[in-house]
Length: 193
Ligand code: SAM
Image 1 (cartoon, rainbow, N blue to C red):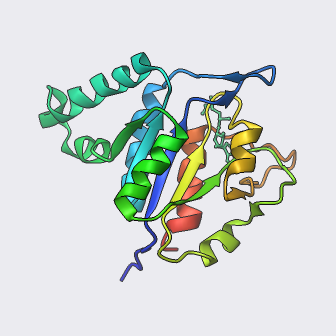
Image 2 (image 1 turned 30 degrees about the vertical axis):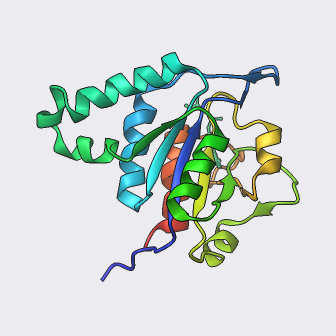
């Protein structure tokens, strides 16, 4: 029988604040694939919600229109699997708002875990194994970046920064699309392997 992970966990894709090309803080556009692919893997691994975080109402409204199409519009009857996965999406204007939502749902604040492709020597760095071994009933919120990644402030303020996925490249290449990174992280942390 598959052992199902009991830790209540949440996934968030951050579009603001995000690192821009020259190190400034920017807002990025929502990508269609990120809505669907991360919703599916979140559902498959039992995330309680997948937050899409953006400070601009226009961007959140775009996601709402996509969700509407698949949930109540023409798409609903066409693909019930997709409909089920998208039902886990929650829109949020900031990381703080997502944390507040989880706190109200769970009755306690989540442990916020940030991710990054680059190697950083911070006080809050944890390995996949350490994090997985530390799970209790405390809710977890795992943050993923867009653009050039989560800002240094977000990485430092998180309760933990997860070690980067290193893969097996001889050149230490590890700049994955966020969709790939979410899948690997969820499998390592919450998978039943
Ligand atoms: N435009 C890009 C795309 O195609 O998805 C967005 C890149 S964004 C910087 C990628 C995000 O995925 C990072 O902020 C991090 O959350 C995660 N990520 C990518 N590679 C990773 C790795 N090797 N280890 C951990 N997280 C990684």
